Length: 492
Image (cartoon, rainbow, N blue to C red; front, side, top):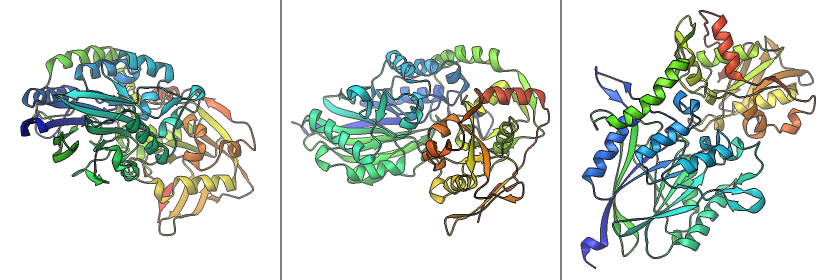
């Protein structure tokens, strides 16, 4: 074997958490465009022309986050992904948002392999997807395996037929099972496509047996921006932020004799018109979806007094306060809680179209009213305000309704006080709270209390089957809405 045959260079482009981010946005100087799949496609095409061995992979959450995706229930997204032609993709938690049967329909639409090793049909212990794929590129075999976050289990609480491993130890064992059964000495490169978050990726890498030969983890879910990849247990770990504003690029040299990476360079590249020219053909495809959506949703429904912002999910925000206060007026409620992650844009207004509103709050969830004791309510606030729940990108934080003041001591990591309308919450008193169905069904994770405990005092009551309908109606009939940060959640 010649040296040229033994060592091969590969370029691996990777995206994650694209969330229907199809359209470019203006940024900086006039005419400067940032992101969008047209520029992304232009760059991928450019690299495919310049380099011999190019792979493009996506580490989950292609869907959910834009009105185009929502209107077509992911069908538009898969059509656009088919055009981008990724070599392999893994599932993220949001791929399950439209339900199991629809996911299987989308998978049949895809012209690319979707791999996942640890989603199972519970009763029959059968994997839902192909666990791995081996691609032969220029005579070298590259193995891809998919691992998805345990968040999927939370999204599928209403579908008991599907389950996943709930610990990293089990996920690591599953990687070993696949490698033992299907990996051989002809496999030159082994890559995990994960959707479990960057910190979990590092923990997973540490658990993997070096004999399994995993070389690289390309992840998603935590929307992490990196200066350079992490390296744990001789495994390179990278992620490419969120959306289509950037793309990760690995240039690696693989040794056929040792089945290992001997040289590598990684870049997180801004996707703009300095990087590549737009792809006119994919723009035409997106335009067909965009025109239909604009006809249906581009109508003014209200006006705010000024632009309201939601800069991050870990803190009380102006926009978060407005949305949760609209929900709170539905019924006689002491506390309304809206997941900060349900608010998917960082600003709204002052003019508000139906399209704007649905992009800001895309999740059309059921709202539940529950009765709890003061002890339970205090337990909930201690859980949602705790330090470890405020990790950017991986938190399950809430916006809380007017009248609440909760004070949390960071240094002692405990809740100091909780009051409603100036009155301290009494341990033996009863209070009504309102939460989204997702958080009710996953109450132990989201609220720190089991669903059995939540329903001890009274049966849960549905106060609305559509949170989106509530918001649309309220915005349509209330003009010049305003909101501000009031110190509802205080961290000392």
